[in-house]
Image (cartoon, rainbow, N blue to C red; front, side, top):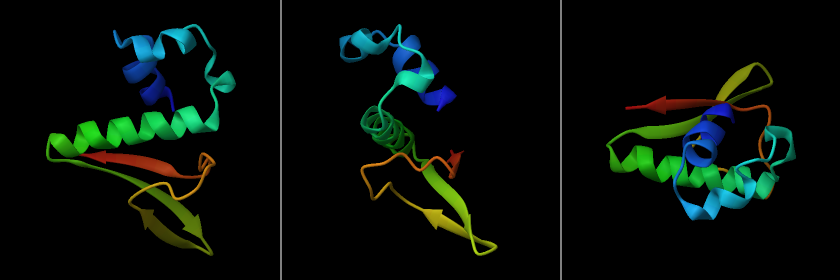
Length: 82
């Protein structure tokens, strides 16, 4: 989440994020985090990389290619591969 905030909100010149630039990380909506994730995923994939989420379920590591809900998956670990 910190990477997304720094890369796409706080250091961005995109006016789309201007309204939330001064918002604390804990105050950003789940929908905004998901939108930021999709933006980052697109940027990474254009450069030939991938962005995947991983979580432990019943002691098994599960890989996710995308977020399939309206809620931010707080228990996932994100890996950017370039």
